[in-house]
Image 1 (tube, rainbow, N blue to C red):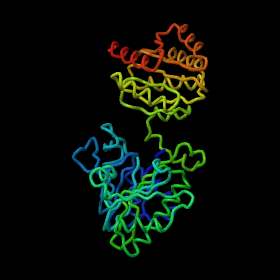
Image 2: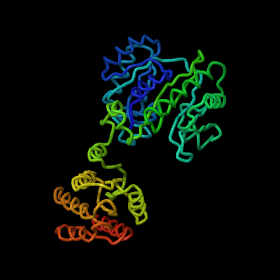
Image 3: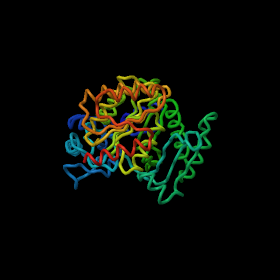
Image 4: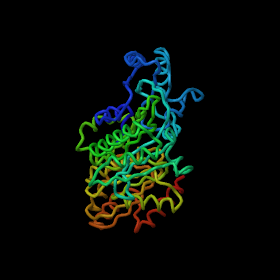
Length: 398
């Protein structure tokens, strides 16, 4: 789950992470009121969307204008910037050409920036630990830095038994070129980030940029936080931060039925049980010359109702030109899948080719249900056969 910058900063403030003063605004007038209360000679107006690259982004109705992060020097300019952002679609490299509509802003005091750094904490599966990634190249995409100047990236894994240690923070601080009180400030800041990461079950905390001010303070100028969805049951306060307007409607609908759904850009809808099988299914669709329209895992204990819901979600995508159902019935029974597929196909008036491959528990009963349904459903014997048949059927239907 993702949250907005202002929400991340509200959470990090509880862990003593140094931040600038600011407030959220939903209208032009609210933005100006926040700016007045801040009383800063320089104010920053930030669009709040779930995407990076806001500053370099452009608004669809003003592609030659300013981006989604603007530095202004008067209350009137705050109002003008707010009016230019709210209700308009911001396009960044992470939103795609459609962009995202700006519905809220974060109004923050300005500061004297001397240096910009980068720091993040993430789950490092290579070492099975939380790792800190830092760089002197703040404000840039870390992927670009890793590709062009990898020597400017510092990485430190933290032992979960010992936890974060001060010497680790000092090691990173020295690598970033920090001196004097900056080192101690950074060590404390990193300690706060680590505690927040662990206590809130984060999957990512990214501060880009982390700035050193003219006064020598180390401050988180931006903040991005992602959370482990599987741990949200422990954090009702985080669930309440979810902004469904920023999420794909189909993914939100899928979550209601405990379905794992991710929309992709292909033509063939996939309904599979098990993430590994889903990945294999998507790969073989590519191998046979097409592309998956989604990743959808119904899980090992799906009911007829969940399968029906999954089918409907797939068909809501206008790009779907065919559907491949690939089920291995271990815990999941093939007859339950078959009943769900038949029920959904009848309810939505199926109009695209459908290929179903079933294997495992009650497979014969499942195939019988499909055959006797009277619907145009093509059965497949194995994964390769299923992929070949659905790709062929889609091409022939076009």
